[in-house]
Image 1 (tube, one colour):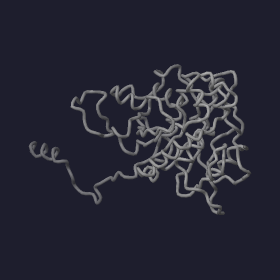
Image 2: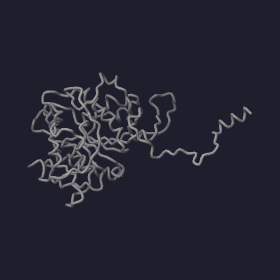
Image 3: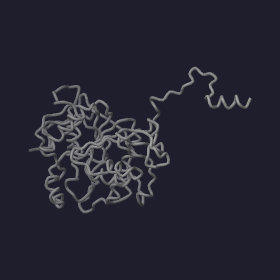
Image 4: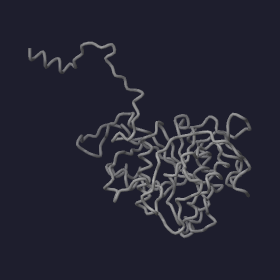
Amino acid sequence: MSFISAFIYAHPHSVSLPAFRSTSSSSPLRYRSCSSPSSCKLDLHLIPSALCFSGLSGNMDCGAGSSLYPLHRCKTIHLVRHAQGIHNVEGDKNYKAYLNPDFFDAHLTPLGWQQVDNLRKHVHASGLIKRIDLVIASPLLRTLQTAVGVFGGEDYVDRTDALPLMVANAGNSNRPAISSLNCPPIVAVELCREHLGVHPCDKRRSISEYEFAFPAVDFSLIDSNEDTSWKADVRETKEELAQRGFEFMNWLLTRKEKEIAVVTHSGFLFHTLNTYFGNDCHPVVKKEICKHFANCELRSMVIVDRSMTGSHASTTNYPGNMPSGRDLPSDVADEKNEQR
């Protein structure tokens, strides 16, 4: 079967992204580097959303107790690993199977689509779909299929005012077209791709092919039509992958959206989270953050901007003293009265 159905559409969205530049031949998506994780300034903080502001520690000097941050310095991110791909079936049995060229840009299996359907039911039943402002997806077939299947609209009906998120049978999915109505925008971002190089399953197609198959997904943040980041004979190191993930997390802080879903890969998540996050937490919390993701697992976190990487003002703070008048805090007034 063909990769896509014969549809051509205009591009619907535009979102700005900093220009990322390589400092390493094996990791061309990086725009700056650190000699080691410990030498990178940690200007963000990641916390499981269920534990945020859950109460003060009995030991106020305990570094792994509670923390308090201004709300406008925080974002909620929902990290999602893609559903089962054809490469996962054999790769879980034998790691060398990931070298199979037949798994180039692996698509979802029928079981993977069932996993997508179940996660979709969860995000709707929980009300999550109504809160998410933006969905970011790695530009590979399995992540794009997962993103549109979980967070997209209902079955597409031909109309002139809205493009489908996915055309029928995209990537041999045997699925109907998916509508772009009543769902958050979906944007493809290269920084959250899987481990680069050597494994054919992690090599992407041309962006023009994806644009035909996923017409309402925004690919405007990707500079190159062809995959210039993946090398057949050079594998990105774990350290480079983790650094790229850290840079992606910092970029998220510059976004205006407050609640973002990220559909990405197990290796990207595991190395990024284990290298940079949770080290100042209780071991149980560290495990909640960093353990391996199952296929189509969703984990909700709060990311905290501790160094003002983003510059967005609060939408809920209120300055008070309006109208203004004399107003001393009671303890200051008591002190002045005693001095008299």
